[in-house]
Length: 286
Ligand code: 3HC
Image 1: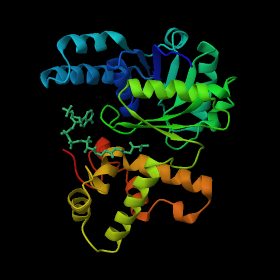
Image 2 (image 1 turned 180 degrees about the horizontal axis):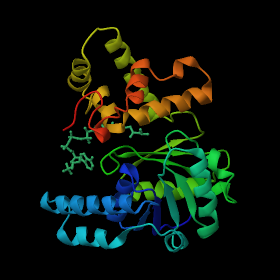
Image 3 (image 1 turned 120 degrees about the vertical axis):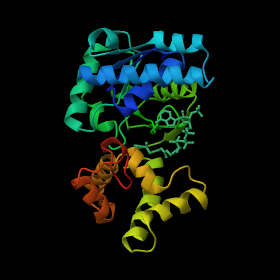
Image 4 (image 1 turned 90 degrees about the horizontal axis):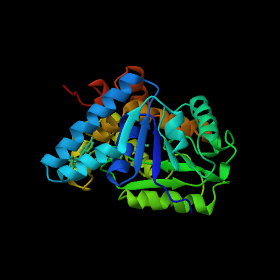
């Protein structure tokens, strides 16, 4: 098993930055890399604010927060951080051509022992593994939003992933305080998103049929079932664009019309109402 000390996260969006922060707090030397300098600055500002908040709340001592801050770097640079990485977690845009180019480049720039993982929720790692010369050291390592808080991480093997790679990423997930959920093979939606989709599709059908308001359906999920958020609130958190694209990808893989996005979800997507990130989804956000 590869012992991991250096982690490189590709992409500093909502997921990448929080995965990087969780890694730094867990003691890994971490770099979060993005091609967009503005995204790098925004992620770094977010991290400083979060670390200060942790100290104010008494969740971290000032020394722990300072150490975590020292261990993490946000940058547009790739070559240096890649050369020092034992594990790369790719959290870039959900486009196959982009991911394949990233994996080919990482294969060139990282040491041969490094594990290359993708945080993708829609693309199994087999779709990028053959862009590298090390398909046995490629897998999905799928975090949940908000990644600093949600405890599960799905580890999905592709047909080439070695036991050693699974052991390495399992150890890293545990060191980050996460619960590893191991999938023996790739299936669309993995496990957690399939569970979430079952609830979401039922909620959309109830709302479309005029059985209850979406607010009341959320209240039922929260107060009858004990979910931390209702399905409509959760769509707003995850992003209606992400929920829509996951569904489209599932349909494209299965060809089964029952996997198509619900028409209400498609309408939100086409209206550009993506949830919290655009200020409007099912709910409004000032
Ligand atoms: N970023 C970082 N930390 C956050 C956060 C955020 N966006 N939101 C909340 N937190 C932290 C708070 O700081 C707090 O930490 P503390 O107790 O150590 O101080 C803790 O989370 C609880 O926060 P709050 O008391 O403010 O809020 P809630 O108790 O309402 O929890 C929540 C917020 C954790 C988001 C909770 O509502 C929840 O668990 N919701 C469900 C989220 C979910 O299901 N995520 C999975 C989505 S599916 C996915 O991501 C897969 C992808 O492929 C689509």
